[in-house]
Length: 300
Length: 148
Figure 1 (cartoon, each protein chain N blue to C red):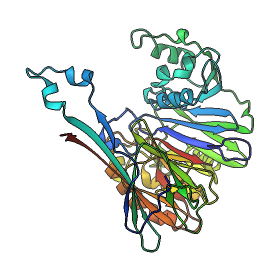
Figure 2: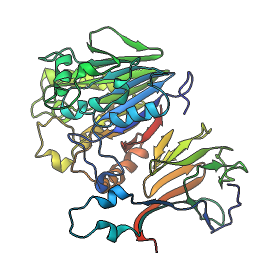
Figure 3: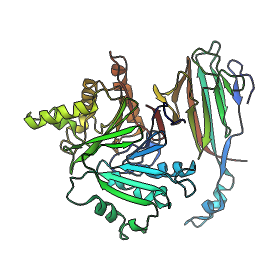
Figure 4: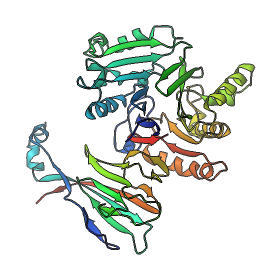
């Protein structure tokens, strides 16, 4: 796949499952690894979240000859938050063990603890045999500020999301005039359809709509069916009908449902796609929707 | 592969992908009888096909093997699709780590899997591939069977 200038950016889903890895026959199609997405453009390599999917991302990189000691690489990992399912793959990311690679990890500056200590604790020897200080790549951990982030032609901006326990960050990557938004782990139902609308919910709704406006690809949390949401209110994840309505209102072009519920089988996700896709596919303007699956690379 | 595809014909593109259980796999057992005795003659067989629709006098089935198969209008393609909207070298299907992938070869009109434009995608049973006017179903079956 070409990733040079004037070619599309390549967006790859390495992990799409929420909460916990779910290997097995019933999750083979959409995948059982927890969140990880890479965006590659003109030799700039960005990864969002380090769920268990990042393991395969690292193996693919090294297998292609990149991120090796002979051919080191600059990698930028953006974490939406540090819940387990978004960082648990980090100790298994092979390029982090290769001397010469540069590996910068970015996260929210608004946590009670420093990002570095959270990630290091995960690699305490009580939990994992290799400590973070043993990783051989040149690793740098940064809590983001308001400064613009730019890597070649890739520009990244971000916003905090509050309706998720402990909060999370959404990211927008702009390249060649195209916009890719990653907005997982947020309960949009509480923002757009709260029991009682307030100035705060109105502000949050407007912020969200502006951030995802006309996105070429929106990767978003749509974990629960309408029925499931009734008993999961306040858990920090969005229901499918609400995400569809908001994304269409924001004129999103392609919507990837993401952070699949661990209980959702391939069969159910197929049924959901069959149920909801035709209406939006044939709408004017159309919005193409799909349930993100591991091993899918899209040109954007 | 440059064999001409005839309407309705199923082509054996390559040998089946078979994985024999190795010694380590068969020796790990807590049973009082040897697992080897149960499994030495068992092989795991994986077979995959592309079934093409959209051509006059078709469908046609092509069995996939371990070798890469090119799809396009070109004479050198294993799966030749003389259809509108198909590039000479449009896409390829290849086998890696016991899985089949489809990769677009920078075609003019793109390669779609289940209606989504892809650069590359691991293929799962019943995936619907769209290349130009052709609709192609990926069919996969895996089975354990006695080799004798």
